Amino acid sequence: MISTTVSPETKLSRTRDKIQYCSSNGYSLKRELQQEINNFYNTLTAFNKIATNKGAGKPGVDNETIDVINLGKLERYHQEYVNNGYNPKPVKRILIPSVEPKNLVMTLSNVSNKDFR
Image 1 (cartoon, one colour):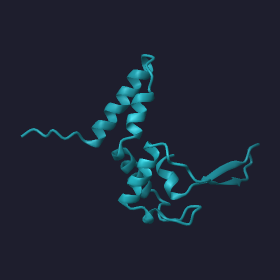
Image 2: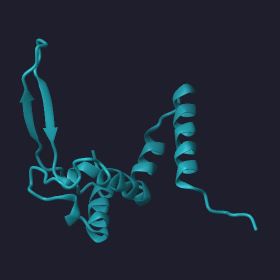
Image 3: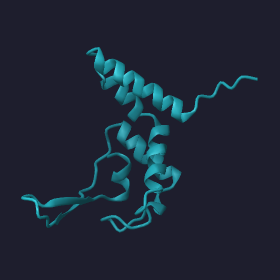
Image 4: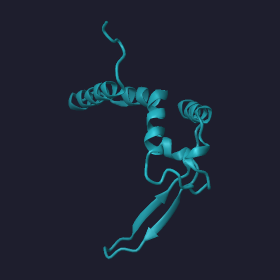
């Protein structure tokens, strides 16, 4: 029996190929990118990637950890974004002194912003 399911890696590879093709041939990427952003599976993949990061268990500037995000909340955030109702919360910026002429800036986000950055 032949499998008809396409793996997430294959989908991502195809998307990268489409983006590269459009970019190389002067086509607009807006539609392609918007379709990918509006795909809930990609939001879920981004969330899972964030959840596996080293600092995932630490609270953000809103004092919430990623543990408070359940599937229902993630779906709500996604729908708000797709329907242009998502308003990101402010982030906290910390200046880190450097020997270079400019200071380094570290940006701390809150949990709901991390998925849609």
